[in-house]
Image 1 (cartoon, rainbow, N blue to C red):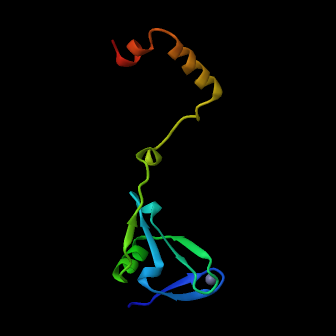
Image 2 (image 1 turned 180 degrees about the vertical axis):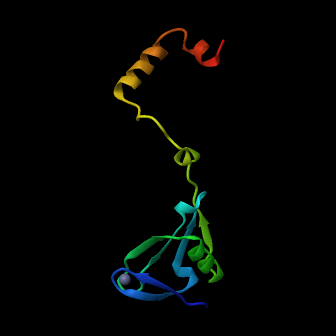
Image 3 (image 1 turned 60 degrees about the vertical axis):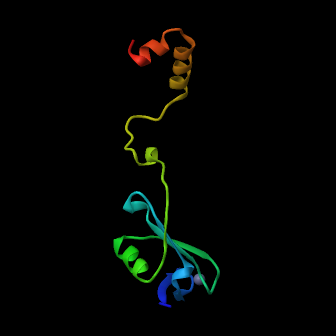
Length: 106
Ligand SMILES: [Zn+2]
């Protein structure tokens, strides 16, 4: 089996096999990461995985695990967060009789 070298912040370079590594592949590159339990200090180490690291790990036989990130988490948000007043206003809006017509455009 291929030996994969990784580095632990506490122990330095450690030797792993493909089975030791958890490679998480997300919907966008920025959420790709890999993790392993350090064989020396037993600490779980997790690091971001760029394209080069992903390719290296795949070629070393690591089986990737898909990560499902809700689509909302990847949306670009603008404007201020919803406030207590917004919520109250929405509540009062729903309390009225016309909200369904207003939302459905009738
Ligand atoms: Zn370690």
